[in-house]
Amino acid sequence: MKKLIAIVLACLSALYFAVGIVIPDPVPFIDEGLALVVFLNTTAYLGLDFKKFFSPSKKKKNEIDV
Image (cartoon, rainbow, N blue to C red; front, side, top):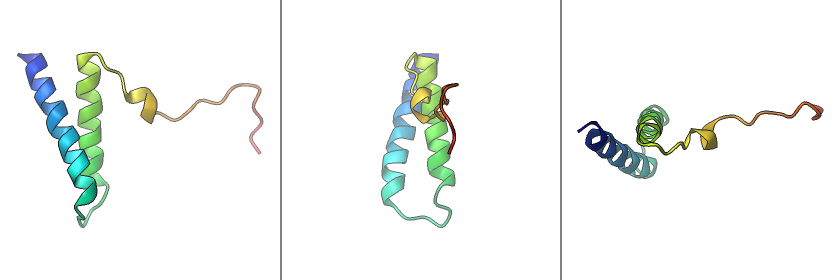
């Protein structure tokens, strides 16, 4: 039952994120950001880890910041 709820939430948040980008709103990034957070957490619960695509990249020790 928990996986079914996670699948439904992932589908709804992905749909809202896809449609929310097209429709203009007064506060542009709050609701799409929450939909993305819900999508990332539910897919992580289901075993698909998409968080690595949205996390900041780590610098190597040998790189020099210019």
